[in-house]
Length: 260
Image (cartoon, rainbow, N blue to C red; front, side, top):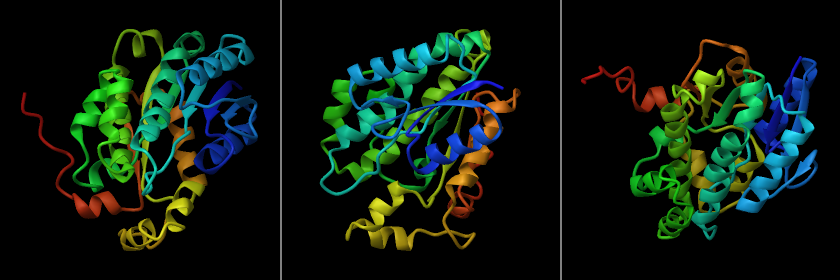
């Protein structure tokens, strides 16, 4: 049995993952703004640093896995910069900060991307590039030039690209740490319920095609996360789990032939 850390552990996919890992006999360190072992605001650099220090202390320097689930939805009137800081930097800076305890236990990271990365057109690739460059101040400025509804898929694209760019590096898989991600579609979580309560977003969610006929359950995403935490041959994988939406939109876009 090992020790795992999960941000956003108080609700949604984070809570379902924490419950699943605890039921399997693992120790779980929950990180959230309320109702967690570690209380932290991951939208700020100081909050991230404090969370990293608290998790490292609680795991005694050995972490079997880390799942950065904390995230916010795009909503009218919500600054895109908030999503940049929470969704992207709140995940990536925590991953980097916990690299040593993860390496000590040959641990795994499963980040949370989204099928909005390939199913929602028109978001800013300039914003994606700013996040990947590590320019939080610039990324926040770019994000606030548009509605946060468009910032959300950009943050999730940046997470997926960061995972794939770093997964094969010597400091990650070379040190025994596996980096992967899941890419959920619409899942019945408080994040989606927040959208359903908004008069602008709710009709868009009602129109969102779900070939399976329903939204996902947090427990279904948690099962996929557990799979990636324990399956050693997955490195740089982004596992799509969305009830068929992406396959319906883009049946021929994957696999795409490599043209070096």
